[in-house]
Length: 205
Image: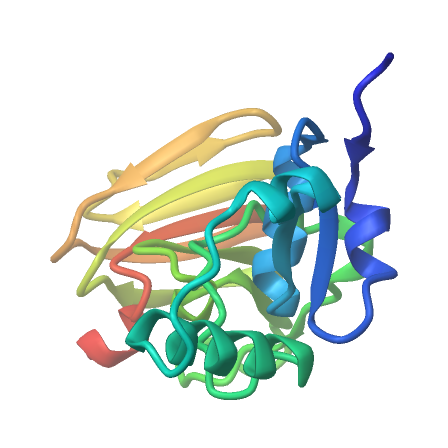
């Protein structure tokens, strides 16, 4: 007889804070993650034969009291039981779903439009941050109090100052170490991904 497969969809349909699963069921990793996120207890259904074979604890015994309390809490949706803590999850940031906003820091001259948007931050449980940045014609100075990698997506990204007037084009990668004083610029347009360490780079100013 084939084994029962428990999927994330099964967990999503669980009611009462728990899901009974056959003792020989196969539980997918995604189903376990879904259960942890939702605080759903995966309870093994041992069947009436296994229940009958289990010795009955003495009335009023400590084991009986603990079992009664746990059963009552599970039946009420978890009660005071803490749900398993899930670790950082894989995150996908799509370029078309993350428009940049005006750069909130001083530096760019009048007429130069600079936009940025963070798509990975410390709130994601990550030690690094990442985002998109766009530049129109012009340049401005910037001193890094953190380490940064820049991956050019569109146009030309010109880095001056300590970078030595280097030009990055689509597919090129810059590494700018902490403490560098550079200029960001472009003769027309540039869009790039930035990856910074640490994630809380704004607190390093």
